[in-house]
Image: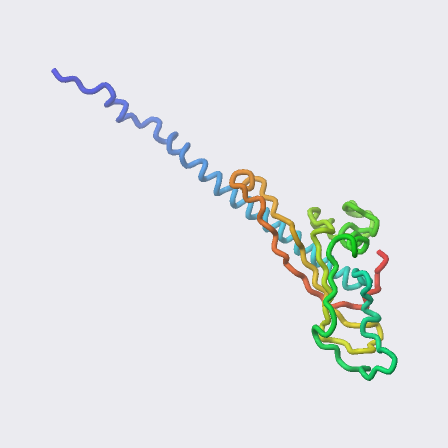
Length: 209
């Protein structure tokens, strides 16, 4: 008499199939769920950065020059005997002038980024002058570049100086991705520069705050 193999009942047993399938699929489901969360968090960081740049550019537009040796009120002043009076200043005729980090414009960047010329870290919200870091705490003075360019508006000898285009951009900030960064090692994805451009006003208002 031939007996059935002893392992045949084990092959036909299905009581653990659901658990096995769940163990296989669950990591994939969690990874996809984490990706959705991280994407939303990355978009939040992107929005934080854009809003900080918009605020900073607006503050620069109504503040004194941030670049050492550059004074918009005198850069287009008429020299003695000049015949350029009233002549339009074309784009690119002068400049650009750039302020990036230390040491040339540290005090001015401190004021825009941290809230005070002597500050070296972010002031708490509600204390001191409003600052970029209060909108995005990850922004420091080494992460900001400000460029003054001729806008094509204004003329030589204009009272109040040149009309400038001010571009502010962020540098060297990476997205903080705590889950996927730890799993896949992608915490070095750099936030785009996302330049914000505004037209200067009198470049004196609130220059001390």
